[in-house]
Image (cartoon, rainbow, N blue to C red; front, side, top):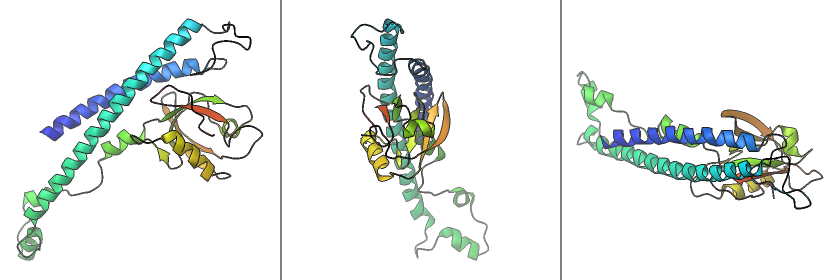
Length: 243
């Protein structure tokens, strides 16, 4: 019963997180539209005057709201991860408690003994499912969590030529994907350097839909190997992903 309640709570948290992501996607799309200020771009021009091409109060309000949503998203994701670990541990404990009951005194399973004696296996032993892998829900929960948002793309950069767009949310970059407590942006930079000259499979969320891309880190006239800047999805500070 506890497991069922915890799973129901986790599903509700997933729905709540999805709603947060929908609102975040709308804000990110507005801020990153052509000519927009992006998630952290300057609100003043080269002479230090407020930009006349954007509504600065609205931009500040949307950035503030986005920061609030990111904090909520991070807290919910961490709670989901905790619940999944508890559910997985519970399944392993159940497996360990079931195994002794299925074994006879000589170490041979009762199921095997009953078959050799031409008896029909009991419904209990027939319905026992033992496995070490996480459930499909576990995989789905962790596989679609963005860990960074693309905030700047340099013209003629490898990133621009390979199809990445402003506002894209990185879900997977080569071997890098979401993990609680990991410095993912540092791992992202290391992954790009380790794959210089080689195509890297990338999954991004774009306007709520997953997109498969292939980016090739390479030397070009600009900075880094990719020519983009992204923000960590759960915080609000600019960090170069390709430094």
